[in-house]
Length: 433
Image (cartoon, rainbow, N blue to C red; front, side, top):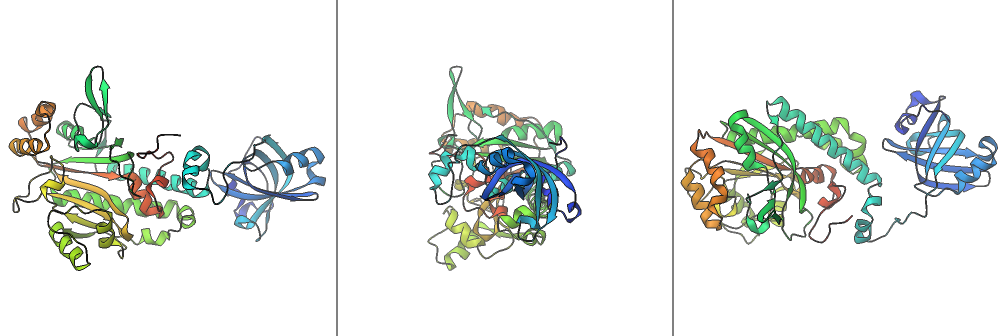
């Protein structure tokens, strides 16, 4: 067998017709009849049908290939031939075939329960849908980093373990850190705020942890959090960066991953056509709109999945909802000057009813306002003295946001549940595999 292997996607090109190529991968489907076997082989680039004849490859190789089960690892060498009946319109007519590792009966097949598939997630991630989703997710991250780099934001590495809860102690994972209480990070934001003073514009990509017992299609207990923080920024600059980031991600994914999007049921044109600016809607106006749609809400009501769905279900573009009541948001958000009830914040809701995917705000700079909010939460003030120091020594107006990466991927890939936007989902009921 040749040692120069070709990605399977190359066999589906018309320019490869007539060429002899070698591929390697895993059996995706198999059937045989008499002296003829058909193996559909997959690698990370795609699938191709291989045709194996006993009289061509020999009895021993044919018997091993025709009896190999799905997920067996194989190498095949042969001529590429155009065949409209084959997946991708081409097949590889084998001159040589080798079974490198014969698999046992694969435990995953159609019509199995979601719980079983999650128990076997280490095998289920081989599905074409999950492979396509992971490729899209990789492009989302690449595009986001590229965009933020181009905007003069420096990637930094804040800690995951922390001595204070940023979003509320009841939703933090607590553990013993050499005899003292510590938390798994809910957000890197407080540390990013510290880093704007020497660096001005920073971002990070870190795992975040929320001990919420939420069993909804959009919640995970561990997720990837892309966060940015900017000195000298207000609401306008902050929202502008958020929407241009999402626009760039969508355009790059549409360009780089059209095949994956199509497989997942997303028309790449949906993403290509996305344009800024996105609609802005103040929270109080959102309440009025929801009331008109029949929701039992009033000023002070939190907006959950049903409300966010109603606001965006018929939209092709994201929607900013701004200026939520103080009581609904984190302690560090800037009190609105012209409305003492609210804070200068925004939630960016995905189109088609997928809900919040980005949350941002201006950061409070008045120490007494921060103390008041922390006292309302019953927080231990001594744990936040370092954070208050940032206001004592050269504070400036600043703002930032966090992007729930899996929520963005869920919307782009049209996944029903957020667990399918990450390879090994962590939920209140699942910590293995």
